[in-house]
Image (cartoon, rainbow, N blue to C red; front, side, top):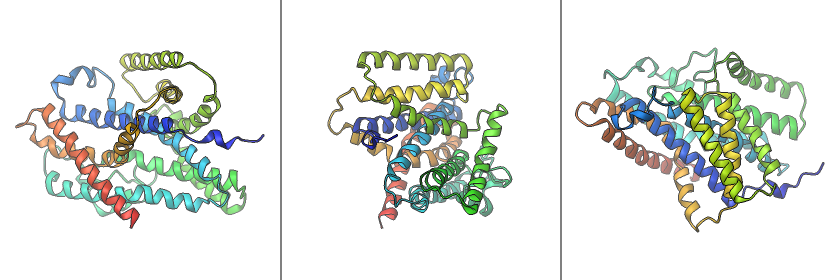
Length: 351
């Protein structure tokens, strides 16, 4: 069957929606960690155990988006027959490592200078060269290596899983599916890569729903589902109703279970992403508005990397500054520092 590649391009509206989803998810992540760490009384009603951990909602959305966008980008890039796995690997390294290295330097400085020896700091055992190198090789929380996230950068537990998912699915898609290189070497590498995913999926099957590979793979297949339904003619009003019902169902589910790591919630979020993309194509975006969101989205990766460390550094001031004000200061500081890290990383990439 012939594939109409023209229909596989993401529209300006869809690109805006995907950027917006990521920005909102990063806000949920930062805000959720802020609530858990500073515990401001003003937000008690949406703080666990009264409500779900908001940061867990964010993780589900971010992982689904990661799988979704990886499938799209691989499909688009492999339309060029000369595109290789090495090209993909090089692109991932240039995308991930500059911010990661700068963030790890930042974490090391903050942990060593400000946090080491304080009552709230519990990660001294992970503030060493072995853990640093393990994180640079994306071995944190990978079974068999006994490597923890470096220092106070606790959020790095998801990054290692995503890294191996990127490489695994790119290898399967480019080498085995597109180029059909079925030889002893390619099959052996496929087995090693699949083993990393397999371990995570086995945890999920054993009801450890924090094993996020399942959600990433769901996002991967969600792109195919979106492509299958995007040309179906549905009115804007019907899409508004569908999106509203999905939001309501998601909120009711979270209020009832107080748990985001679940198959049911991930299905709801997958449908929300797809229906949101369908709806945004029915909207006329104001000129320039998408550029604002794209600009904010450009440093969400840095926000993800450093926000927990920034919050932890400020927690020692809770006796002199109100928790809500301190949380707001932490968010502003995170935004400023993340922008600086992103600018420095971009300068390196462009040099």
